[in-house]
Image (spheres, helix red, strand yellow):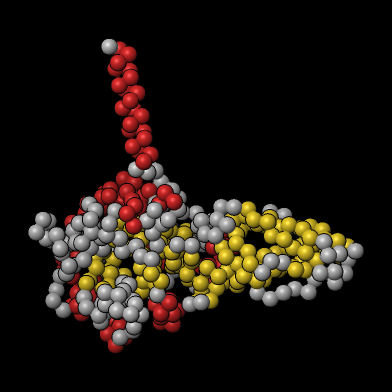
Length: 379
């Protein structure tokens, strides 16, 4: 009997262990560095639950975020669109109330938000950092946004090129958006929603000084939309905050300290992307000798989760170096540098010029960087 009980205990333990591993109940960090003066927080500010048209209970959203290495999320169920109201009561604050304590238990900040779901224009807008979502349930969209403003909400335009409202997938700016901007009722735009990147929205954020956001707009369970076990991930808004708190996140959003992380691409202002690149990269052997047209290999380590895709920008008279380089995520790459035979003997400092094509500082414009090396030439 004792042996039977022991075997049963071992069997139960193995089943629980295998089940836990299969369901991935562990946290995988997002490896992107902090930048000078700020923490780099990983956030998703557009998430749905069963309290609008999502398929997931609110507290599950908190654990999904924890597993995927996020610091903060916003629950943003629709105000006007309530397809489950025959099964669940329309309680616009309830999803946040359920998700928040679950987030607190896991160390994930849960922000109170709602999606104001209207025809284009003005389209769908998220209001986050609300105190009461019920007051947004009004017939006129201007009144709904006014109420959100009175609560001090941060308001942003969702998926401006969504084919459900723009059949050709092109984002368009309407007079209503000018009106919102003038009223101080539009603070940002989703440059990325789900897997869609909107270059028009990227350009508007730069021109009109609006905050860039990148959100999942997730409705299904996370693993049905993103193959996390294979390295796939939801789009993330990187928030550069003074501390890890709701107040610091809100302050950073209003002051446009964000960048977009989607697939293997970063989108944002140079002031943020430059330090992310520089703090991700370490040149292990920046100094070396070259004889005549000889060559040497520079070891470049990339500690981030982004594989940086580099294209050479120009040439240098005394050395040649690769036209294309991929600095693979989490790896050390060999970069071949050769002499051209024109260098006089002695020591030289070089900045190998590249453009990182998947770090966009503007639509179709990559971040310009340089890789520093110091070479000593001899005949």
